Image: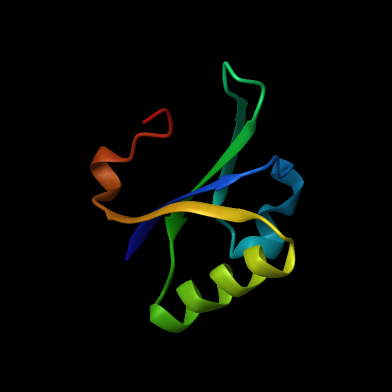
Length: 77
C-alpha cells in the first residue's frame, strides 16, 4: 500500500531510513511554515501505525494521510 503523509515541520531526507524508507520532501510555505511530505510503500496497517507513532514521538503535527496509487503520487499537492 502506498501512502502520502503530510506533516508540519521539516524532516531532513537523511531520516528516510528511520521512517520506513519513505521519500521525504520538505518545503517552506508562503507563510514561512515548513511542511514535509512522506511518500512510499508501507507493508500493512501495523507499519502505518508505527510511522504515525514515530511522527508523534518527534512532536510533528500530521496534516493528512492518504492511500494513493503509486502511479499518481504527487509530492507538490
